[in-house]
Image 1 (cartoon, one colour):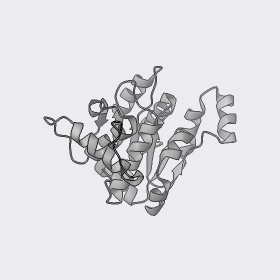
Image 2: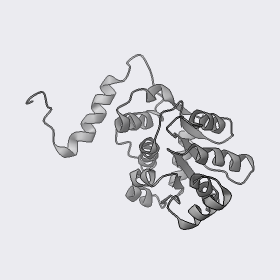
Image 3: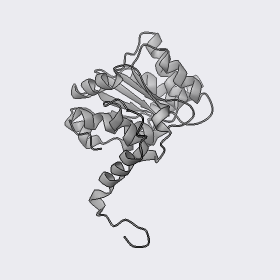
Image 4: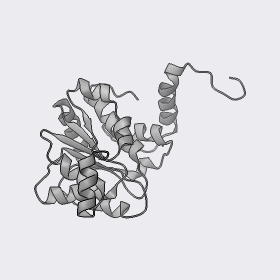
Length: 215
């Protein structure tokens, strides 16, 4: 070790990072086995151990999501960044893909006509997709609110909603709305979250569906 730096091969960096995370997890706290790979991957992405307390799982959410991915469930994100962060090669091996409609011209046009956010219109568009769906919302609380409205109206029945928008305006409230639905969820309570967190949760679930926890 030179200058306090740990000498490690590039391909070993992720493995070493997870070893450090594991060593720093509270020894007096047991994380449910199916939740642990997700919690650790989010901590790996953010370097923020607050997610030990922030991440909330509905009962059976992980099992249902993994089963859905094995049936080819597609993922819908609310940002291009979230889409970019999802491991598409692994997802394709499960027979699925990831969608994001934020840059679509028809979405922008309809949002202007309706006087609402593009994220809202994106969720309406995604509701027209067939097959099992997982929604990964890391940025726009309006997307999360619209998902809840569609669920309550019987127009959408996702396998899982990942509700981790970050910010200050309607962020906490949108997460609370989601947790009041009958839909399975993984939520980052409070103001924290982000597209990187949404993608990290997706990837953890994808690896679990493939039988590779990678942690």
